[in-house]
Amino acid sequence: MLLPLFTVLLLWSAWSGAWYVISLTAQDRFAEWREKSAAKGLTLTCTEEDWGGYPFRIEVTCESFRLQKENKGSKIGFGFQQVHAVAQAYNPWHIIFKLTAPLTVDLARGNDPTAIAQIEAEHEPSLASVVLKERRNPDISVLFEKISGKISDKTGGTEFSLGEFQIEKLNLHGRIEREIEAGKADYALAATADALHYDGPLRDPADGGPIKLDALTFSGIAERLPLPLAANLQQTLRAWAANEGRLKINQLELKQATITARSNGFVTASQEGKLNGKVKTAVLNLDKAIDKMVSAGKLSENDARISKGLFKMLSGNNPNGEVITDFRIKNGKLYFGPFRLLKLAPLFQPD
Image (tube, rainbow, N blue to C red; front, top):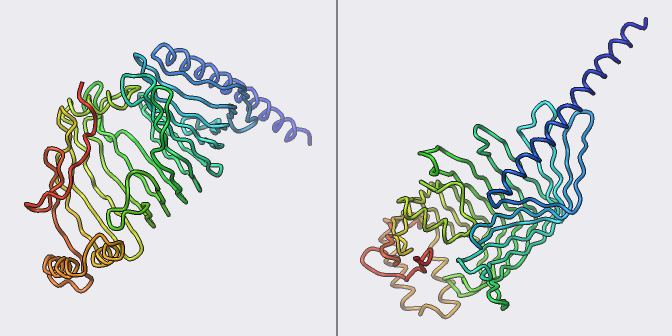
């Protein structure tokens, strides 16, 4: 009668011992990673750190989480009020993170350590997933719910706004598609955003007001991306251009009310930071965008009629009014056929 009970107790004791060993191993590996990373300028700090999860999980809670990479005076860092990490004891390579607001992101814009672009945001408790693979190159997914905040430029003690934003739901994904050689890889990126609102220097080209999108979808590959990334965005972009890198756009879709735009193509950058590329775009209900421009006083009624006639020809009298055309980017200028539409800001400043 007692044999089943003894068997259960024995198995439970064996598992408890195994969990204890796994937990200690995880803590040792984490401490080892932290020490090696700090020597390379990557630091992770917590004001409080608590390990647990018995009997089936390995858990750690980090208060005032801050992850920062510094290199030659430049830095990139982000933090949360709290990060709670959970992994199953039998599968420690898949880690789920619960992220508690506020979120702060600091990004050095150049070699001047006082020149920083900063994002400060509030959001509902959000989740991230990290799957560690060969050579510890992870697959990363992040989901933010109801995220809103501001973007600021802080340089030399002064601060000015780069805009405010609200997004109902933001999904981000990243993984190494393939390693080309040491220090270079094709990195796959994907993002979706629902109910995006941005009010800042970048305006809606149709009416000059804040940018409002019902949905945004992007998937592409940053080819020949230098890895690991530098602590300075300018340095990373310069190295990417020097590697003859290319952003391959598999899908870029924007939805605003009845207007939908879908694009695919590629973009590159010269050594001077000027953009080049070719993007094929299909726009559904483009006439609605023209109506917005008329209402905003950016286009006359006569010019609107001419534009609608031109787009109708381009659409081949398609009953849904879909216009398909190619846009070229050459030396930092955007062209529609032979017509120059606008001048694009350099992706980065040359050395």
